[in-house]
Length: 193
Image (cartoon, rainbow, N blue to C red; front, top):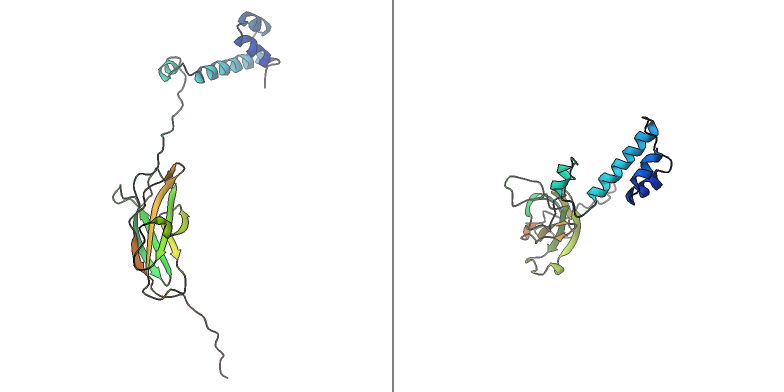
């Protein structure tokens, strides 16, 4: 609840007419006076906090709490490690891990997820533009389903890179695995009576 005319009073306070503002406020302990002085205190604190000439040491001297500064996040600097967990027909389950921390399965704190690329063939291309983009994943464990018409034993490759809002990091080394078999085909059979 605002004290009636408090916006005008604050602008008068800011312009240097302190005695005029205070003479209009009932100082007898009324609720309206308390609300006005609380609003005035908030105005003064906001003015101090937004002033670029006031540093954190000066704010601490005044007894004001300091706002936490966000740590600046950069583009991820390392490539993820890639491992194959299982193969079931043309579906392959992979796990990404942070190569910078041993034993950790989590993605790096600087990344929002990973971008996945696949290639089907004997040798992976050196140029990432020749790979197929498979989208982004936010979890370290994920599945990729390759086309069901691939014969068993076909070489498939996967590489990935961490990303965040500032960009994408380096690409991992290609991980090769082989298709375990084509997809299941169900043929209708007529039962002989």
